[in-house]
Length: 366
Image 1 (cartoon, rainbow, N blue to C red):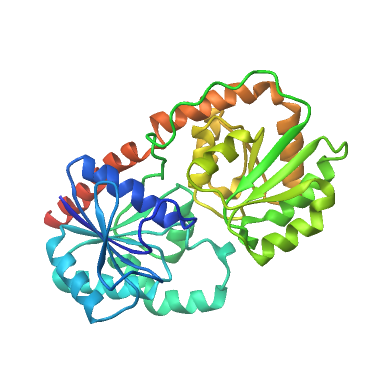
Image 2 (cartoon, rainbow, N blue to C red):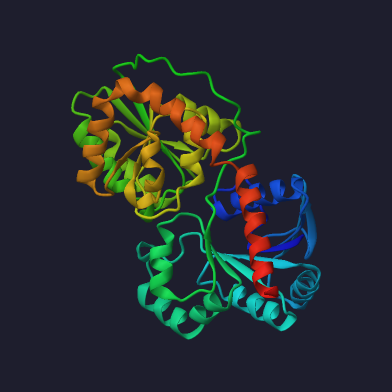
């Protein structure tokens, strides 16, 4: 099977952009399972237009702008491919590529990456764009790929797609060997942490408010790691007296070391699609508190994490619950690693995605 991915980015898994991490994992393991993969990316910076960037088992053809060269590369890739995979919504470039696919008789798949979540802002502009252009784009797709079951609610309110399927994200088990089991005894002085984008939709102010209420005895510390931003600096300055500190960006081994140094990881997001960062936390055996709106609830019964509401009150309650149940942390850590090994990894995701591609192609022939 020949698969073309079109993305904004270069499929660099060391970037904070989640789509890059998704493509790095899916393309690597789809190629290992026998698929032929091409990735064309539109990125802010490239060495030269159309430069080929080698990744693990595939390459990315990168362009910095929409041009005749990028259009020609896409036209060639669409003719070559059996199926074309687009990423994101409210993306004008994807609409153009979708039209090119239709003219060439190639089915296209769309991964929404939680882009229809109302918490992401721009409500009226997005509504008009969707009504005028995007609804038809979604409904003409060969398939809509949900990363979580919860994404389907927003999708069904926005469009009537032909075919919908859910394949969760994952992590690369080659990057995350099985960790040393954590001791059942948890120290009284604890370090809590967050890693990801430092932006408002990640709900970090609510986390800091909740933490300040819980840390009455000054025996807790909250470390926030991520790319520098004015929002992040301002937030930490406001709560530094409560034990909140910035830890800067973390990638590669530094990211792994940071997560493993924490006694509890908190993912407070207002909207997400079971983030890869949270999956990495489970893979490394660090206890996890995650908000319900991070769309991980369908895995809650696995006994892998604590869950709470995305308000300062909800996060406070979640923190107090997690701290009160410290004796369960080692069990939850083992369960979390098992969930990653059995379900939430790129090898499993690639196998399931290839089966869905086959289904889409079969539907076109029937």
